[in-house]
Structures are given as C-alpha cells and as structure tokens.
Length: 267
Image: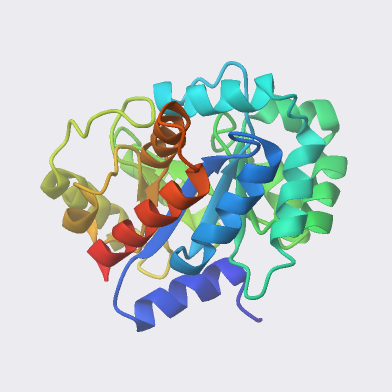
C-alpha cells in the first residue's frame, strides 16, 4: 500500500533527522484572501498545515485562536470558504498535506458523508475533530479511512494506559499528544523534560506511529522538544496575525518570518 501524503511528510523529516513542523492557522483569518496567502507563503518551511474552522464557541482554544476565529467569522466566513481556500492552496507547486481541524457540530450539520466528500474534492488529507473522542469517533474514523482521509486521534496526559493502547491501535497515520491540560496557547506549565517523558511512554506502545506534540509550543520552547516526531505551533502564529494587524503590518510577511525562525530551531 502506498504511503499517504501525511506519512510521506513524516518519512521525509525522519530522513532529514528532524521533527516535522506543523502549523495551525484559522481559515479566513484575517480575511479569506490573506488566509490563502499565508498558507502559500509559509508552505515551503512547513511539513503539514493544520487549518482550523473558525467556531464561535471554541472550547479547546485559548485567547489567541479565539481572537482569530472571531475575526474570521466577523469577516463573513462560511464553511464552504475553508474548502475553497484548501482547494486553491493545493494548486501551488509542491503543496503540503492539509489537516482540517474543527468541532463535530459543523460536520453533523453538513452531514458526515457530504462533509467528507467536500474534504476529498478540495484535497484535504486529514481531520482533527476536537470534541469527538475515542471510542465515539470509531464509525466516523472508518468513513474517513475509506476516503483516504486520515482521522487524527488525540491523547492527553490523563489518558489511561489501557485506553491509550486502544486509541493507538485504532489510529491512522498520525496521533496528536496534547502536552498539558489547558486550552491552546497556554504558557507551558509542564517542563519540556516532563512532556518528553510522557511522550516516550506513548511512543513505546507503537514506535511506527507518528506522534506530534501540540499546545503551548513557541519559538522559545520548540528546540527543547525536537526529539518528537512532529511539533505543532498554532497560538503563537494566531498572535502574530493579531500583532501585525495592530501594528498595521502585513500578516503574510510576519508569519513567513516566524515560521522560518521556528524551522531553523529544529533543524
């Protein structure tokens, strides 16, 4: 069986002896045009792009991502716009895998099959559904697999060993480890050493699964976690957009520089 674009991205990073860099930005922030331009401009330094659906009550998201989401919604963002942005991004030369991240409510409202067809048509490679935990996601994850869309399972510091083994067993080509129990973008309350200790416990269960760390990663903490398969930076980038708007700068240039700097710290 041929490897999926997500698995290929991780394989490339392993060959280059570095972790994969995953970025998270909210679709439509600060507007639809800029959102697409940001994806295009950071693409060359990123291995996998996570694109978030703006949600008006994002339970797992901290202040920075919420600000991004509200900005996008205020600018008239609709679900179809996310697919449109991904489809346009995928037309560039050497696009990277795209993982859409959101909440189950929007999938439910659209209808699971219809939603997955839209993902397939626009070139989405994976899905993270924050509020659809295992085992409730088993049926939907199987539907994703049939469409060659990777369903990304989430693990946290409180996941029990028995549950963890089952989740890993059911996972597709990537697992997401939530490094600490807080909303995204919180200050890293746990030391990188502690995070890696927990991370290694998960890796021991199945070394072949790609495991990424997310929540609280910034340019200050990224280097200390580079033993991981992949690292997700989200809130720091959303803050970058906010700061550039405040300072009347171009968010595209700002994020491009930020991502370049992050990449240099894990090479």
